[in-house]
Length: 268
Image (cartoon, rainbow, N blue to C red; front, side):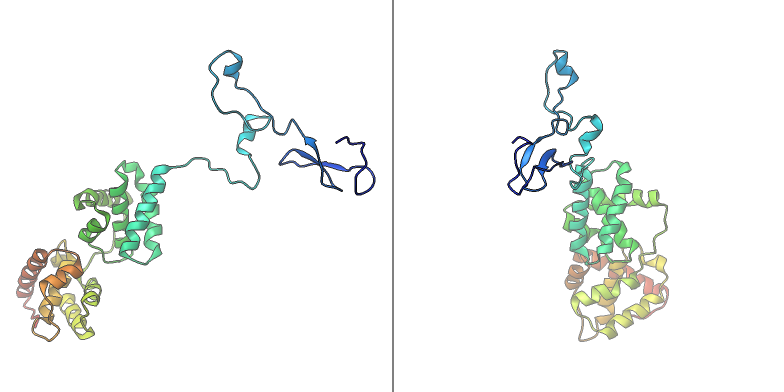
């Protein structure tokens, strides 16, 4: 269309240039006159000019700086980090299987970003970050349960967990058996009076005595407290609630009996 032609809406065409598309458009009728050649410009690579092998790809716009400015409203992804994305997805998957609290996901993902310098495999590192975030927020999670959810051997992520603990240099709250009583009791339907009695006895025992498996001690205490009542539970039921095997519960009961005897505390 010639710019001298008469506009269908009366008079001569009144053209403007669209900065994003490079089109020259009539404000009255909307017809496109042409494209500005200096807006969308093709530039060959210098290598091609020297007779070297031509490769796909060229600059967008007049200068190299224009290649990121594809469109004002189009977000430009500077760099896609596949490992980070994969780790975040693993963390969300593991955390949602353990708790409904989103703070665990957010915290674990932040720790994962910081802990990547440890150069460990993605899945075990993600599991270790979830375990750390749960401990940090006082959420009862056993490594055994996390292992079953993630299908990763305990020793693979617990060793990384210890490295994260060293890296953060932050003292986490002690994982006490008394804090595990209610979560375990709720899973097997024990009443409040059994829970309170178990907590009262555990409160008399020093935290250092509960050992590396406070959740096992909590289960063992519920077993002993409910044993002579109508609410008695089996070791198998407790093992399922705690997320360990029955042999572990049996060992915890034996250990707890020794502790109670040492401090002259009655469980019945």
